[in-house]
Image 1 (spheres, rainbow, N blue to C red):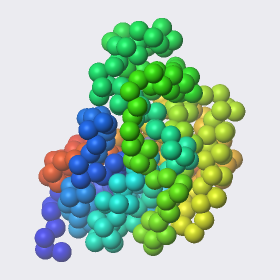
Image 2 (image 1 turned 45 degrees about the vertical axis):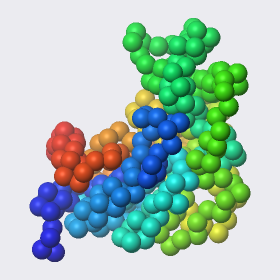
Image 3 (image 1 turned 60 degrees about the vertical axis):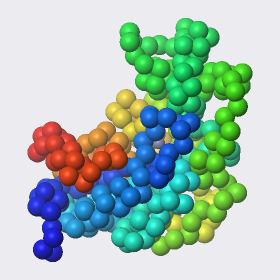
Image 4 (image 1 turned 45 degrees about the horizontal axis):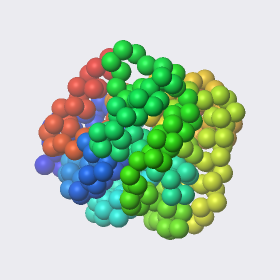
Length: 310
Ligand SMILES: [Zn+2]
């Protein structure tokens, strides 16, 4: 194609790209504040359109099993925000790019995602009030922020969630928040471009849990997804948070035992030509594009690729 952006072309000749998006609100709800990872549909379109000039976008399953990633790209969307089918699906349809949506079963039952509870407490300026009541219960480094230490693997996510619930119970109600996520009462989309996968039941930091607790998170959500018939599904597992510290050997073993075919990380790494394996499963790195211009995104991707030692 004559309109090929040289840097997209170069990048596609060097590496694969597994992209990770979350919310895609045209105007994000003020309640969730600045900490929400949001890319507006307009930006999403520009980013994917530019990358599609040189990359071939494939399903997440095809990507994870590909013998070589070079020139391949895939789009994954975590956490099941309802704005994705409502506001972003038209982008994927216009570009004919497949997407895999990774759901957490508990969000579909009308419960506010506990990381969004964290965001609400920050946005309302209630962190100090939370810390007066629960600060002692946390392991934290000096200066480690509320946003960070609540997802530190030293603190059991289950306990953290209980404290957030107990705190918010006595706070002003959070109205309309459960509508952020796809609900059980809403139909998942049966669409040739859309497949659904597991992101665990509650999005806990899996490495902060016992093996039994991890199993309930991994196998429980996989079984929950099986009850959602009539839609395309992927057996790839998206690790909540997706950093090195967020999972352990047990996570990989249990995910394989539950029937998953690959694991998605989100370490901000642009991978070279081949997929790494950790024990029994392929481990695929993803990058999170921010709501930025195409030129800035390409620069960021190239910098990340160079930093990965290639
Ligand atoms: Zn997530």
